[in-house]
Length: 239
Image 1 (tube, rainbow, N blue to C red):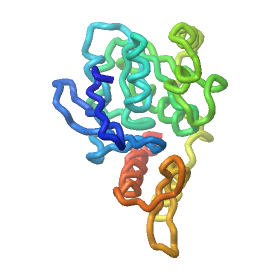
Image 2 (tube, rainbow, N blue to C red):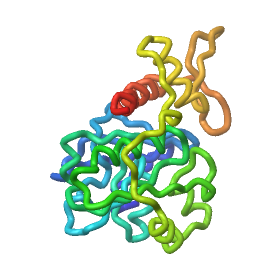
Image 3 (cartoon, rainbow, N blue to C red):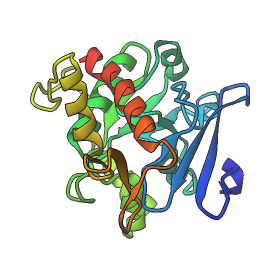
């Protein structure tokens, strides 16, 4: 954790996100029992982007900083995407001639998002594989859960060896299509964050799940969830 400058204030972890020059461009914040939130709204910076610059033929792409760190702890170079399918055009050349292994979270948006990333990298990467963790972790879990549940580096490398080369199509059943309206955006928000966010009409307040109970949103988490949802619309646009 020290290598990634992870901080702890007694209430939440904070993780700086640095660009390829080492400049801090964003912060992630995670309270116990809650989702990781981008504190500055997010600039789409790849977490661990400097791993792409080193002279190494392989790189693993995952969702988020914690998954990337879980791989780095085991001697595997990885970068964390800002979200499912979120890879900016200017970042694509950084993957030139790399053997890319993409590891989606085990949910529909995770698989669809990584296929979108694979499509973007097709003309620059040496090869692209997508590792499916279905059956190894529960739905909505990811590579860090694979390791937390007892999975080993050797077992993960075996999964890489068995993984198939990414195709160039996104399953039309994977991404749910929402209307480009206020109602569609509300449906997106519910689909992505219903387990952590709800609105109490009698109180006229947002409530957030703190891991033990529903609590009044006193830190604008509803706003940050809304921002994250809007950012995911770009992944839909790629589809």
